[in-house]
Length: 132
Image (tube, rainbow, N blue to C red; front, side, top):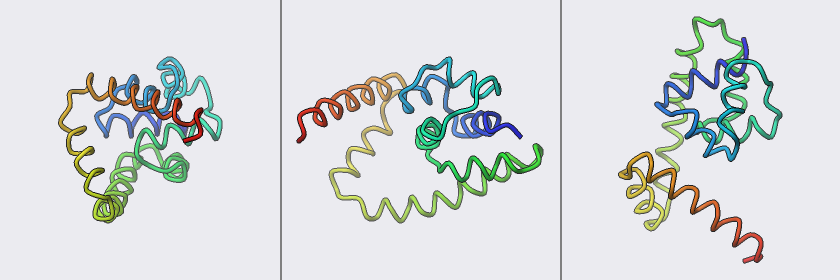
């Protein structure tokens, strides 16, 4: 099974567009499309970015790609449920400001989420360059 097909299935399960994944992974939408179609194999670095954008781990993507095609959706849903349990624990550990920011972010429209993510990435790059 092609890992690109796994990425596409997971993206659809998460109700995300190629544009959203590309924005999260800091790559061109056309690259996401090529990977999903199997026209391009992602490097390890790209796969890590895509996994992060899909809120999963590269190991889950690899494991799913080893499944028979008919089992991939079920496998990813099961893995997603296991990750949700882990996320619930992590949520309890987040500080109050982070919880408020996540709640506000979840209430934004998809366009405003994309805009805010771009602004945050720009701010982070700027801060990193200044060494703060």
